[in-house]
Structures are given as C-alpha cells and as structure tokens.
Length: 476
Ligand code: PM9
Image 1: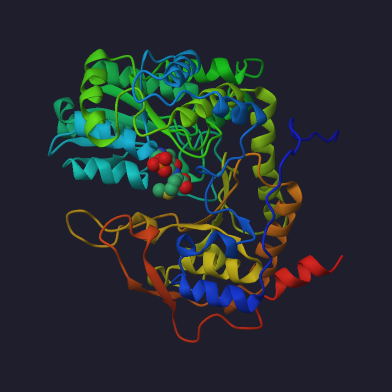
Image 2 (image 1 turned 120 degrees about the vertical axis):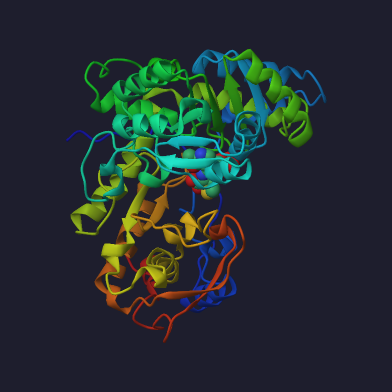
C-alpha cells in the first residue's frame, strides 16, 4: 500500500528525559501507583491524555503574538467567536477556562433537583456537574458500547428504545436536555452516526426536549462519519461537522482536544435565553462573557486551531496514527477495545489481567505496570474512574475496565508508537506477574485524579517487569 505521512513537519522539539527502572519504581511509589500523580519529567512517552497536550502550529504561535489582552471586548474574543460561529454554526458563544467550566454553566442553568439527563455513556466531569445540581445521569447508549470486543461502526449511538423508555418513565418535563457526546470517550473514542443524531433529534422534538452536544472530539466523530457512513465519503469533514451540529440546541466544548490548543473551552448555542443565563453565570465563575477565564492569546490560539482541525488531511493523519498503534496491538493478540477509536487505544484490562478481580483494580494496576516497564504513562478508565454512586455510596458497577493509551495531537512520531506497542506486548507476555492494588486514599469526588494505592501482596516483581526502557534505548 502507498504510504502516507503527516501533513506537517517538526519545527521545535522538547527533549525527553530517560529514566532507569529504579527511578521509575521510586517515582511510581511516590505517586501512590496513580499515573495522574507522576511528575511529567519522570515520564518518557506521555499517553495520559490528549487533553491540552497538543502541539500548536506556527500559525497559532503567531496569532498568540497578535493577541489583544483587553479585559473586556478584546479583538481576540471576536476572532474566537467568529471561528466557532463559522465552523460549528452556533450563534452565541461563551468562552470558558476548559470543558468542565462550560459543563458547570449548562448544568447550573438547566438542571434542577430530581431531573434526569439521558446521555450516551457517562463522562466523569459531565456527570459530576449534573449530580452537583441534583440531577441524575441515565445511560441510553446501545448495549454494544459496553462490550469491548464487539465490532460496530457507531458504538456511540443512542438506543432509541432506551431513550424513549426513560422519557416516558420520568416524563419529559423532568428531562432538561439529552446530552450526546461525539465521540464517546469512555466507550473507547467511539463515534455517533449522522443517522442516529437525526433520529435522536426526532425523538427530542416529539417530546419537546432540548438536545445538547458534548462536542469535545466532534471533529474525530465527523471523520468517522466520512469513512463509515453511506453518502459522506466525498463530503469535507468541515461540512460534516456543521451538519452534525445542526441537530443540537447547543454544545459544551473542551477546546483542549479537537481545537489543537493547551487550554480553553466554550459553551455555544442558538438559544438566546440560555445564552443570556450563561452570560449571568459566567461572570461569577469564569470571567466576563468576552474572556470566560481565558487570556486573549488563548482565544487566538483556539480560533486558529478551529480552522486547522477541520483540514481533512490533518484529521485523517491523526486518526491514522491512533490506528497505527492499535493495529500493532491487534496483530500481537493484545485485548483492546474494538474498533479502534478516535483519540486513543484502550487496553481491556480484564482480559489482559484475568487473574485479578475487580477489587484489585486491574486497569489501575496495568497502567502502573506499563509505566514501570517503559516510562509510558497511560490512564485508568475503569472502576476507579467510575467512582461511587451519589446516593448509595457503593462502587459503581462498570462493564469496561480499561487502560487508555491516549495520543496527543501532532506530538509523537510513529516510532514512539512502536515503543509503546513493544512495551505493551512484552508486558502481555508476563501478565501473570502483575499484582493487584489496594486503595489507600480515596477523595470524595473524581477520585481517579488523586486516589493513592499500594500493591497487594508481594508488589511488582523487580526483575521480571522492566529494565526495558534502557535496553530499548541503548540497543539497535
Ligand atoms: N477529558 C480526558 O483526558 C481530561 C481529563 S479526565 C477528566 O479525556 C469529554 C468527553 C472529555 C473531557 C475531558 C471533558 C472535560 C468533557 N467531555 O478537561 O474540563 O473527554 O477541558 O473537559 C479529559 P476539560
């Protein structure tokens, strides 16, 4: 097959520090076996997240130099607003410091105690803001999304029967909006089809319910529609994104992902009343409606990033790199979530470490073992991330117990992906030796960020795992 490569070249590099196995052991223990608590200088390849870890283009850096840092009405805000209007198609735009800032605003504006918010699988920050307002998230994603092995082109789709059942059970007046994420992060970066968006909109219209979008990775979703949905093969991603967004009353957005920047977010809508309410709320929690917690340079970088993200060649290369890593793991018979998603490859920790039970946090343990082996940082997306039920306090049941290898945009080369694939594969060969973990500190909310653990029983074997980063780097 004719090879393709990224439509960009490297202009600036950031040196990475190589660590020894002993250094990584110390760093991991100091971090309480939680990869979130590692220092980045102790990490070789950082696949913790694609959030705010993007490499910006020379055009974004130039735009930063031209930023207007006025407290109110800055020129940079109007550029940002224009970019969101043009590419997403929403008229009213409010910047926020990041995605959860926008989630906070929409939850405060629309959710009242007793409300139910149907959505296509939970996301950690989204659900916590819904619950803080007294709402309850209800999952209406198709069943296939909870099965890591099931191949389905649009695993982010809503099950219309589930949605209708929830609406009829609690009554449309108790549903402030339906919230759809495109793509679905915790299902493995899986997309929603245009046909499903259309059908969900019809159900919402039938019952007079608003439809809201978590547009955090909607460009990746648009690319999957282009690849997989009949009639879209020759439609530019930019047009697909606009068509997707035309189904929604508004969106929350973490610009730290699709928009190719390091910080920022926004709330955008066509609804004047919601916009007005958001203007009133944003000044309390974020800042003036023309900066919302961002500097002028942040808004400049986002505006430019918004135009770059819908370049068909760029987004195709971005998805191809994720697939490049995922395919190597499939070829090595490593259990991963299928099909390979948009922003990450997800290891299925339950099948990777079948000797550990749920109480031993297999995904957390696998993430720790991978770091020890090669300095690759990943993220648990399983029972720790799912947290506890807001009412009963019990650990939430979680079908998927995953480790996310998240690929930052325009940052790593395919050679880095080779190192990751090699490390995961060698770990798989010694998987019986990976021990479980016990939680020693649990914060009350979003526990995955700061929880601490210790190895059960014997701990991580000193020799069997690891020492590999050194041999990888010093042998040809
Ligand atoms: N996602 C991620 O690594 C950041 C940290 S984990 C809480 O995947 C969706 C679909 C997200 C997301 C963040 C947010 C919140 C909303 N929706 O991190 O506040 O994936 O900008 O966005 C993370 P912010």
